[in-house]
Amino acid sequence: MTLENGELRELVRKAVLLNAIQHDGKAQAGPIVGKIVGENQELKTKVRELSGLISELIEEVNSLSIAEQKQIVELKWPEALRKERVEEEKRLPPLPNADKYAQVVTRFSPNPDCVLHLGSARAIILSHEYARIYKGKFILRFEDTDPKVKKPVLEFYDRIREDLTWLGCKIDEEYIQSDRIPIYYEYTERLLRGGNAYVCTCQPEQFRKKTLASKPCRCRDLPEEEHLKRWRRMLEGGYAEGEAVVRVKTDLNHPNPAVRDWPALRIINTEKYPHPRVGSKYRVWPLYNMAAGLDDHLMGITHIIRGKEHLTNMVRQEYMYRHMGWGYPTAMHYGRLKITGAFLSKSKIVQGVREGLYKGWDDPRLATFAALRRRGITPEAIKKMIVDVGPKTADVTLSWENLYAYNRRILDPLSDRYFFVSEPIELKVRHVPRVFKAKLSLHPEQPEKGFREYTITPAGEERAVVFWVAQKDAENSEAGEIVRLMGLFNVKVEETKAYSVEASYASEAYGEARKAEARLIHWILVGEDLPCQVVMPDATVNEGIAERACEKLKPNTVIQFERFGFVRVDEAAPKLTACYAHK
Ligand SMILES: [Zn+2]
Image 1 (cartoon, rainbow, N blue to C red):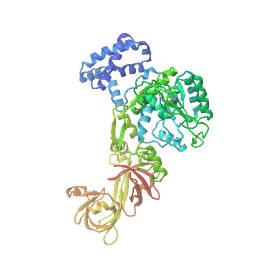
Image 2 (spheres, rainbow, N blue to C red):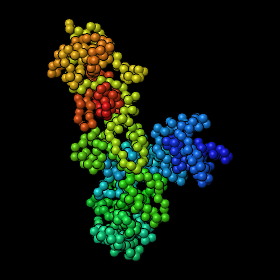
Image 3 (spheres, protein in one colour):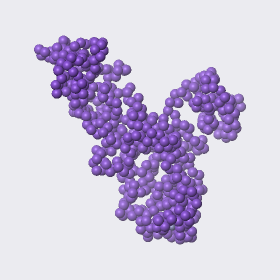
Image 4 (cartoon, protein in one colour):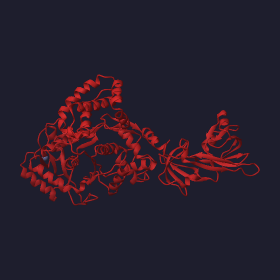
């Protein structure tokens, strides 16, 4: 399809107008080119002409008020605005340079030395989401090349895969760096042969002094043959740990000394520190910048999306890319995302679980995905929160409450309601005039979900009925007070004892309760009860009683215990065990 000039102009005008409406009336050129070319591949060769036209129309459009802009769009392309509105809700800013590559490829690259936690959510979700939006590829790469200090653990490879699946992040390709050691060796040799890397045998302290003074160490300028000889000696075991490292040449005058001739490979005594996957097969191990830097190129990563603490690593790796004659991928460095109160130290999590301080990777005190999953925090809520924060470079602080708010919006329409009585005590109601049928809706706004039904039959001369109520509700009641048993009837408290409350039937109508400003309390009929324990976020256990109707709940169901909070069911019978999510 070829566009006539007039058509092209209209197409651009539409894109500029829509962009302006999205950005408070001021269109921005960058994303517009990408969007137009993305939707009209034949314009790929006309980017320059297009850019000129865009600038021209931006000037025109930006001089209008947002109301005028909307009016034009409503009139000419009413469909567009509606579509835009739907997409607006959760959209990430366009990926820079997306049109420069045939296919967008992103990666998430954890060290399997711990399970994943909320601190990784941003890297995972942004990388996956962008790959998905641009119909690209999402790679999982295990960076497990430190068998000594950040030692990988076999069980975590699987746990990480599980976490990604749970988050809804489909892995298109997977790599494990400990399988790729010969590849790193091959490229190291290339760098050595080109004089772009060298084997340094200096004491670390000596080397540091030299680089701080912008001076080469005594190894740097030795002939290539010497370095290749040393390299072979490294591989053959001729050096002990710490006696030799391969360094990539950078600029000894680089303003940041940490960039100057960075270490690329070092020796680890794998007899003493065997790797969990490859044992003692290798003694020379690539360091982070070497392995990640090479892999990003070799795996065709087009966009590296990571925290800004990696900025210096990019500067380091760019030297290696220049030595190899490669172009560096597009890198996006987002700001720190702090979640107040979330415990995110990997080493402390691992140590705590190993020592029994935590009851497992899903201990509710942890912010691991396993723990969030167990508590009924949905992956959709995590995703929505991360997409809303986006890839911006400013630091962001969120709280658990923020995450709960996202989660509540998802759970609220889905969760059936039940009663839970914490620390139950008996409430005996006398003089109940007849049999009552309580019909409690499973969801107040969705009557189609159905009801829980209980028949309340008074017994004996006193026409008494016995209920379980929460200690907390009972404690606060005093003789003479009217309280309403939710969805049932009103009672008058007569006497409050240590382990029971005595009351008598007052009336049925809700209006009466309102008039008396009666408190609403929830209840469970004695005999229609199911023992229940809820594990709270601080790992304490709340013992109580749930309605018998909960017996049929399936594990993993999230329900709402009214006036208590959302819980995720672990097991429903013979005892209901659940984990607390939030209010
Ligand atoms: Zn040296």
